[in-house]
Length: 475
Image (cartoon, rainbow, N blue to C red):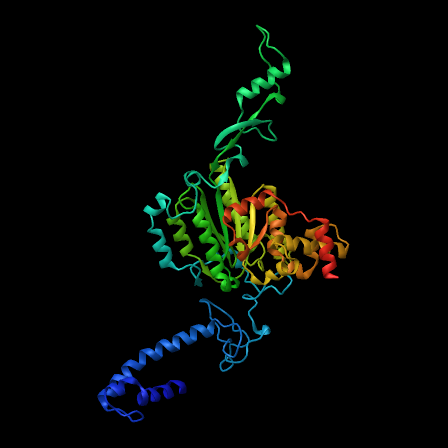
């Protein structure tokens, strides 16, 4: 208040309006000029104070970092919220357990008895996307239909992103092969030729007998639609990473909009996950779903993956040949388990254990899954080992496994508290057979979906040379 009064007095004595009114500087102006000075000063001071408060609430350190942004709803005061103490220095001990890094290694927040019965409230919290910007994008039609706005080939825009030779059921047949599992599409001419080659020249009056080893299936080329499920973390801990989430979603939009690829949205926070938008190729619907996302609450990461698999299960009931990809965008610090893990007889529950369970179910269902970590602190592993993020964590886990005398990388991550707390993205991707990415790493590639699909086809393999070099570096 004192600052506003002093600024107002200085404005009355030295503002440029007095110079125009021919009032000497340093003297109180006459009443008409005084009224004009006050009318001009009031909105300027209001905008200044508003901008100052906005910047102070976003600071993570310093004397004014104690100003808290309170989410709507019931809440308990934390240390530092008392009257007269909000301007003291902010320290790690005063941070909220909800907003900080989380895992079942740390103390789990106290939950109400009916916590898991409540559906997560998507309407509370800070908006993840700018609603007006999404509305403006939804109005773009002609440029999209002509393909001028999308960096995709014409063939890809007309069909989809996934190469049909990977699915063996879509596109144009170009060769045949012996079936490796369930027969999808029999190539009759080559099957007959294989039977003739096995039995010899066909004799008149005797039917041609086709055995199982004679069957050949078609292998297709071209492109087929892909169903992408975006599992987005909208918990309060993502508040500092909103721009990274927006950039990843915009890149996926650029590569899928205008094609027959389908995109669904699953958001998770508080007590569980919610399907915000069923898979669709209509991006106007997806924009409306993205506009609903708000940041608040806790992180039920395992339930987000389970909800995505439920969505894919429903899609496969509609079309058994659907080709799917789950993209999990989070900071991978879960602190809420699955609802079935907190029933009677569970004195302690572990969100990381349920995360491993969900990832193994996704692996069992042969679901493509990639993990995108938005936490910039994980770049340190990339700098140390001079390798991509997934390979760097693979190398770090392997070295620690050898040091501890263990026999499995997943076992090593769960046994080492530091790894268990920070290797969430790698843990999920490693179990599912996918790959973990950092946001700055994936945004540098030409095709985000292309990198995701390539990661699901190949596995990280560490050479003995890399292991020896890393061991020498660490020793």
